[in-house]
Image 1 (cartoon, one colour):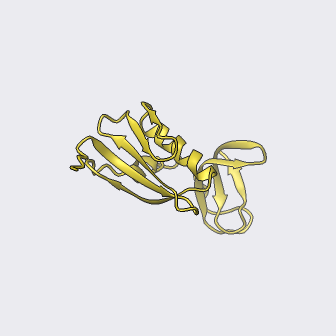
Image 2 (tube, rainbow, N blue to C red):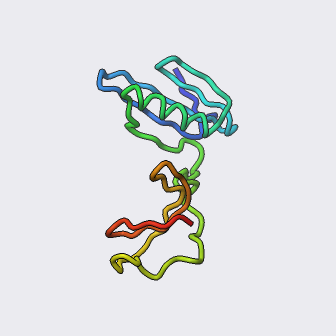
Image 3 (cartoon, rainbow, N blue to C red):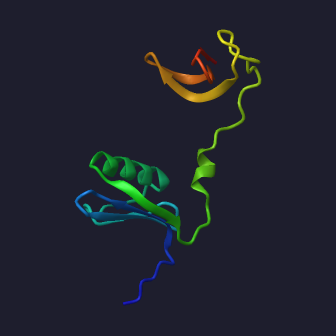
Length: 127
C-alpha cells in the first residue's frame, strides 16, 4: 500500500490513556480537515476547525502527542504571536516598582481585554 501525503499540509497525532489514537490532518487547500479515528469527522473550516477539534478531544481526555508540517513549513506559532504592545507602557509598577508587561486579551473579574500587569505583585491596569 502506498501512502500518499501530497494533499496534507499539517498533521496532529492525539493519544488517549486507553491507547486510542486519532490523527487530524489539515489539507493543503487550507480548508479541508479530516480525522482518522474517533468519529472520522470531515470539515471544511480550516485551521479554526482544527483548533475546535483539538479542544473537543482534549475535553475527552486526549492529548497531542505530536504535530508536524507535512507539506507546509508554515509556523503556526508565528500566527499566535501578539502585535506590538501599545506605546503608553508604564515605566514600572506603581505599587512595587517591578517591571510591567503587556497582557493581550487578559481575563479577570468578569472582564476581558488588554491590560498592563506587574511581573511581581500582579498589579494591573486595563488599557
